[in-house]
Length: 253
Image 1: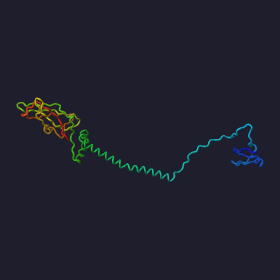
Image 2: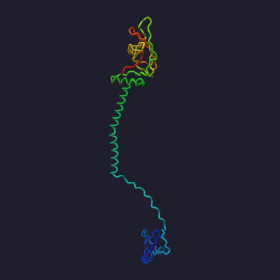
Image 3: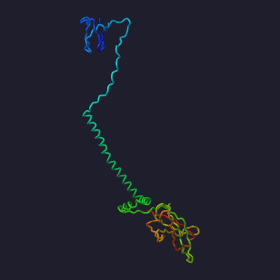
Image 4: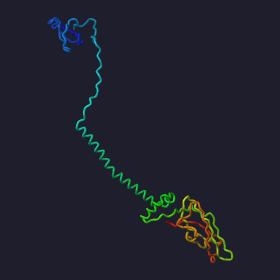
């Protein structure tokens, strides 16, 4: 007959036969803690119990402790791989430099072209930039003309009057006004003389040098929000005009 017994020192239960109990008067050695004890008091026969009781553990089983990750030193191959990855990032950075430099050069060229094309407006609207633009133009052998916007230059009033005691001689008077917030070039004046049916008899374009008073400087232009009165003496003896039309314009650049 066989059964189980329990070590009183470590409470480990293990199988034992009846022959082993009788050999040393029930004295056995625990295979777990190596202590010697009498196995007979705690011996339980392996014969089935009439109550069909399930065997119960004398002590609850504790859950196993959580396993923590073990930190291992990096191998040489892993360190080399990381160095290689960093090298690839540096290589990509080196490859992007030419594109960055090319983009900056293109931006600079665009700014220079814009400054050249719009140098008149920049100098008029931002007078502090004019010395720089003038130096720039000396290098490129260009000039900085005054702005020429006909929609901001107007003829406020005009008239054509005969001169008494001088048959055929008339005086053309006009009032120019610069409505811009910056100086503008003096425009050309286009005069058309007409008959009684408004049919053109003659047409002439007067440049600023032909109508400006001696007190005005053509290079300076007409100052912002300023008016200028002009008078022209004309000989119309052979035409005998009955009317006129006056317009301003700027020559094509």
